[in-house]
Length: 148
Length: 127
Image (cartoon, rainbow over all chains, first blue to last red; front, top):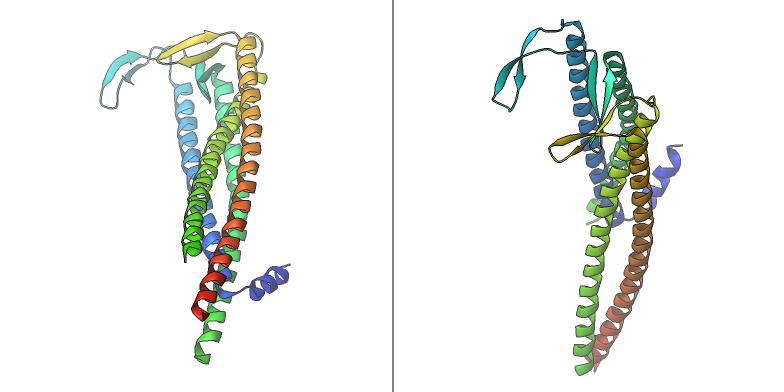
């Protein structure tokens, strides 16, 4: 399966090959950025999940500090932690029970993980094409140079 | 001599048109990207809303205000938004194809012009 693309790459001129390698390199960078974004989103969700877990074991009425801004906290008391508001996107929030909330986090984390794995596969394939193109390009250039 | 000048001027105009078409295509693709992301987000929301019982509370963030929404209404809103975005994406696809065709034909006519200029200049050099 790897043989056919390689033969096509061999047939191309140096210019063509160089252009192709640049393009594929750019694509690999974009894919890598997406991979990083997915990873950081996953990290945020894990933190949310951990926070939920922590909240669920706290008793009602427990004293806590509530963040109003990044540097301002006010003392407060924990209300019923059985209900949570979940941000599902496009400005919609859904009231869920603690169990449903935890389940939501788990589901999202699973979804992101599967997306990440799929993307990783695609990135690996693109990277191998870029590497092959680079290798063939080098070979061709070396081939041309001695004749001068 | 004048013919070459005129052709060169024509070439410049065509080159400008070409660049403008390229920019338009780029803008089109950016807008398409934005809409695609929104579509994905809205579909996720719809999936979540579908999982809920009738009596679950749904709130919408309007500016700094969280407003309680009727589940049916929220469903309808999200569906409508999805429809709208899908229609926009289709329209943009059509425009993109159109722009692409114009770009290709512009490229062809530029290539032809360049050839003509070259032959004229070569002819003059011989003379």
